[in-house]
Length: 156
Image (cartoon, rainbow, N blue to C red; front, side, top):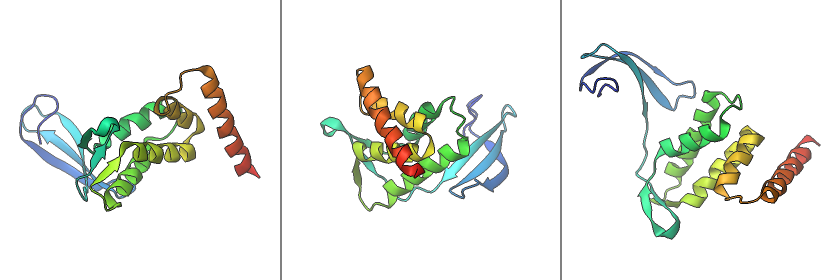
């Protein structure tokens, strides 16, 4: 594994253990060149999945893009990293076990929205504002009121 600090090609595994949700192996490594320590994660990839984007563009599924979007939506919300990882792992599992070689990016967006709705209502609205391309304050008001209605229904 290449060192992220000095780009040396060899590193030594010092410790391995499963993550808390058992979806990955966490490996603590030390660079043989500069001695720096860093962590890597090994995850199962069931199949290669192609994402069909708008305009029929296609690209390989990239877990990191979902992680980045969810982390940005949850920023400064006090959502634990472990819960974000569980959400992203769940979405990745759904995508890879769907039995399809291609999936629409809109379907993944809906999976993220559903996961964030259950995780944190503010993160859900943040993600929705970008995903649904809110352009006016009234768009936020309308969407937020529908979120409040869902929350009120769940309290009964």
